[in-house]
View: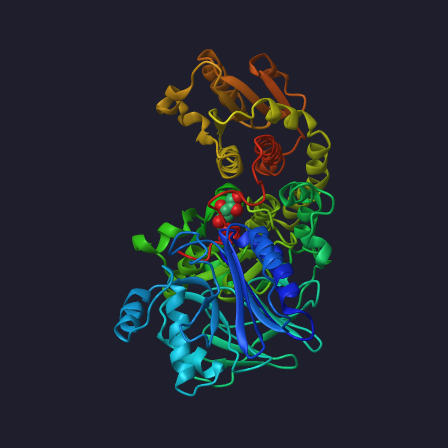
Length: 615
Ligand code: F6R
């Protein structure tokens, strides 16, 4: 949610910043802008709409050469996506330009204070107050670093601010609270960005910043302080993927590339988890086995697709550990006074590791004494940093706004956690765990076989590319969250009305929406080994009798569904708990191809942003 870049070094700042913004555009694409310092002053350009609009503006009105600048790509919160509201915001006296990610919650009071002093506002944004406050501090004789600390301590809410002033050559200064910011450490150049993708082509050495820190970069130095100016620590790390991972590699969309990466991504989530001693190994579980044995409740908190991954995981975790597991939307969690105590294990699932709702939920949980384990894909992000333990999904960067490999690898990581808990708590013998691991290790090939046979799914999607149509998804048990995920994909990128239902719930109301020709996807549990199989087959007959067009996903060789399926897609054979790993894939591909056929921008769907860093 908003992408930020800062650069100082030997290259043309404009080129580095535009390239960085291109890699961060998944975070927001309502407007883009940049500011550089040259000829003793600030020069800037900003344009509503996608980055290409800004590039056209720069082509028409080039900025002077500079080696120091900041840039921003926006997901609008305060103020419409217009040129005026685009970042950077420049103070009235032209002494400072600032870009911002997050929400300044006390901006109304600050705006009133500044207006009383005669400041005239040129935008509707919360950010502009920061520009004027910084200018006031600079005018009082502060350095930009001091000004940033003073202003940041007056702000409430979530923010990353990055600023430049013509008074200080070769310097870019930033502050962060509750919003992402990483430092890229180069040779004779340094970078600031919301995400390492912005500078990965220049350096893979990064610094993870802490909460309430100010960071100053010059070409040769990075200085980190707290808001009061006291020296502070930042954690260095090396990014374990390179530029090629952040490129489309011949695919039309990042989302398609990421769908096809799923066999590899799932294999990487599983890699190295089984020790020579016949035990599961997780990344950083800084919770003692004694503490894990004491817990009497598990609460999974997450948002969107990650929440659905949690819903899938609940079935496995309860089945394997016999510990009660609740799954909760992070945005609802802390506002309902949840019953959490030191015996509760909170599991948080977040691809980005920066989702504000999820972050606030885990802070609340820790305040109540709960231990928190994060399942996350982004190294060094805020959520894993603030958790007691982390299991990284190792899926590589997910750039398409709609989550795909993120979701599948979260399910796998949750399963690893479930097995680990079962191991630690003595609920499963080593050979039982090994048997499930063997099944999990077969999943990359199973997913690959789904992808190898994906063409009929694409063909169906192309024939259904009609805006007005509503599409429904049915599933039971772990198939229910898969149905919800399938519907979410279609809503997000095809903008179609899509709903997921628990198949058994249909008769309690939703069946009324079925009419002649209504397309309904049904995920059928594995035959024979699953008690729900026959019930779902009956559900298919019920909707078909009412005119539904049934699109059935069932295990290879399951002939019992054939008479009731208008379209049948075969899934590789696997146990019920693992079926989501293969059943989700055709639903992702269906949404992708349908959205493509409708002419939508699949990677940057309207109104959405990849990383939701505001509550
Ligand atoms: C759906 C999607 C979102 C995210 C949600 C949580 O395709 O991408 O629903 O799953 O915003 O994001 P993370 O996992 O980054 O916390």
